Amino acid sequence: MHGRRRPAALRGAWQRAHALVMIPLGFIVLISVVDLASPTDVHLGPLLVVAPAITASFGGPWFTGLIGALAVTAQVVIGIFHGGLFTTNHETQIIALILVSTLIVLYCRVRERRGRELTRVRSVSETVQRVLLRPLPDRLGPLRLAALYLPAEDEALLGGDLYAATRVPGATRVLIGDVRGKGLTAIEDAAQVLGAFRELAHHHTGLPGLAAALDAGFARHLAETAGNATGSADGNAGGDDAVERFVTVLLADLPDDPVEPVRIANCGHPPPLLLAEGKAVRTLEAVHSAPPIGLGTLPGAHYRQEAYDVHSGETLLLYTDGVTEARDGERAFYPLAERAADWGGVEPSALVDRLRRDLLAHVGGRLKDDAAAVAIERA
Image (cartoon, rainbow, N blue to C red; front, side, top):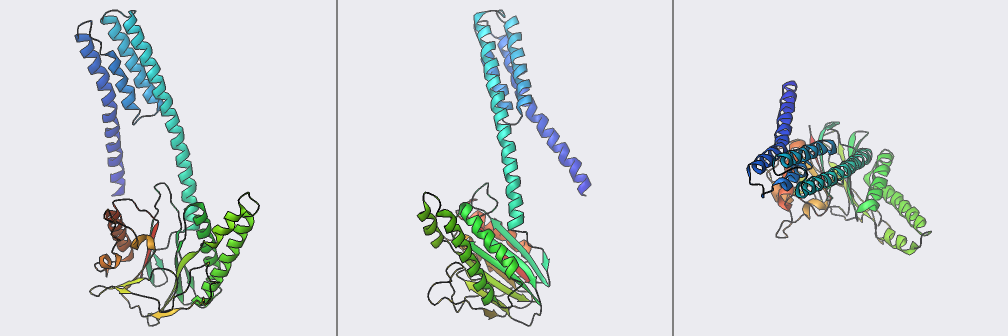
């Protein structure tokens, strides 16, 4: 099937390319014929510049230069048969057409070079994304998983939202989080939390201990960042920024034994939803609130885990506030729980696809903040 589709796709691309080529060539022929058929005091030759200008929209510098050369040739033919080649008017038109075509070719070269640079940048960005925000496997133990990540920036592939999952003895351990802020600082903080989770998840049997260890590691990370900033001219700004940096995190342990409850430690993160076909959406609110990672030194801060019954056929939906705080044109928030009521019984991959389409439709195709979600179902 795929073998037949590929030649068909190539034929379609070849036909579209040739159709585009006919547009500037058609302009050259049409303008030349009309100019030659017009009285000698009517000059349509300057319109030939349209041909290389159109070609630049889809062709490279070499092809644009070829079309420009054909346009100049057509202008020469018009001059020979329409009033004399060496008249001041035709000489001026030929020189002007050569200059404009040359400028268009130079523009194509600059655009092509910048396009290659953008391709290299995107390649590096994709590599960084795969290293930091590794794709979740479709199956992990007895679970089916699917993840969604939507960056707010058009060219960005990674921001401050993060997720990860790993196997621990007898369970699957999942993390979803949201770094305060944007830009390179947010990516740096996200990388620190993801790296710490992948290492510390295997050294703590309980989620409270893991949360406390993540908080301690993030505090060291902030201290090192502030220390590096003190050597700059604006060292105080680095310290103030570190005070305001934190990460909302939700940790979940999903046991392999379906009889055992799911354990969740919520550190300032939006509560997950539990979806089931034919049932109302259940919000797994935390009874004991805990501060985000990075604010564990607040008075009275204490990380705890809570147990929730999750049965076979039910889907656990984790998400960041970029989903629920997305607004439409009338400033209305995205009603995730209301929309998710129709997604019970939908497998994780299809569920996150529906969420993606519905969320982008709600905001008109562009998010103001990064958004991430993870759907988990017991297979």
